[in-house]
Amino acid sequence: VLPVKPGTSSKPAPHAMATPPPTAPVASGDHRTLEVPCTARSFPPGRLVGVRPTLPKGADLQMTLAAADGSKEPLLWLRNFDPAFRETYWLRRPIVVTRATRVEMQAEAPCSVTVLLATQTAR
Image 1 (cartoon, rainbow, N blue to C red):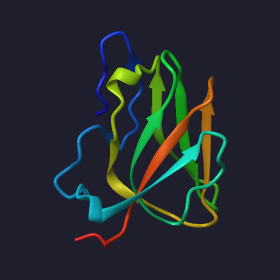
Image 2 (cartoon, helix red, strand yellow):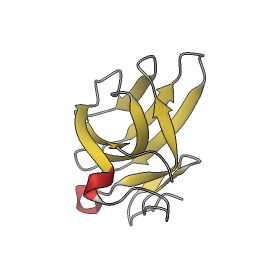
Image 3 (cartoon, rainbow, N blue to C red):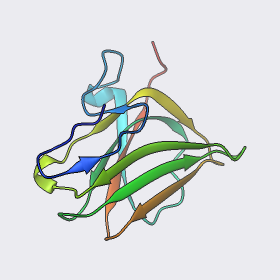
Image 4 (cartoon, rainbow, N blue to C red):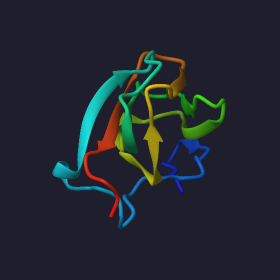
């Protein structure tokens, strides 16, 4: 479940949570990070394990992954973002991102997202 901060509301993605699950890679050597603008249409291939958005105060963001087969996976939906509570949102299950996977981000203000990709295979 995604945290709801005072004065904010959010609709949680079915597999995202703010604290890492016991099997999530949390050591700096277990994942690599890449900051992408919200105008990006793809992420680098790999196992997506988390996202950390950077938005202005009060902004909204919706993130969805679209696979080559047309299926869509909601990642995150934030409303009325407060930068004082910026967090990493860890996925309950890593998502394999291929070159054909497209990201759809809808934001009402300029923003960026730090993408966390696993560097090791799942244990």
